[in-house]
Length: 277
Image 1 (cartoon, rainbow, N blue to C red):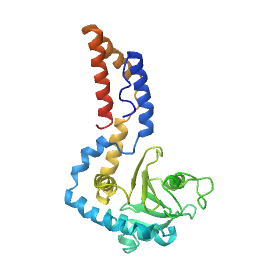
Image 2: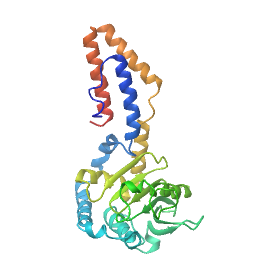
Image 3: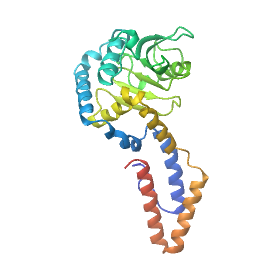
């Protein structure tokens, strides 16, 4: 949005600004928009956020040690510390298999491949797949890029997407290097991303709101994704017809300079509102 402010001017330039914004907006799209997150952020008591934040703080206190860990030696502990202790799932690393809803080292029955973790519902259906790498070997950028030792020709995100589509009722994929966490659905272009070591308290609240066990199993996570997708429907030609009509109405009613000023303000307010400002 900062790149767009100050670009308004003539009607032609305004239309170019809108088209530029739409293109930029598609590249900025997150899985769940800030507007939707703001609607639901207070549905969880502050005391619950603070209790979970304390556990993240404990995790961060071990950052130097965690950065030295390999994928295989730390993955079960990572799932237990973050998904069990912070987000409230029951991992098979800490609970007996029958009571667990996050299974560690889950084998795909179709081809025998293993993913580091899956979240299952009460019927045993896989709903979330989890792909892990170590921060020692894999930077945040490398979670998206090809890395040595990964599946040939696939980024960790792409590998997670393969697992995601192997389970017909799965909804989300999560990729992490024990610091960066990336969440995406079957439309892989739209993601949500955090750094466990660097996120502030407000960012943590969004992380917790989206991924905690109650939000996920009660349907809140999916509802927020759906509301964000609904709000992000492509802006079709009818929108530009409405913009042209507004421009014409203002110029028929007011002097040119004042009409242009009003039109620019309406346009600027619409863009800022869409950005959640």
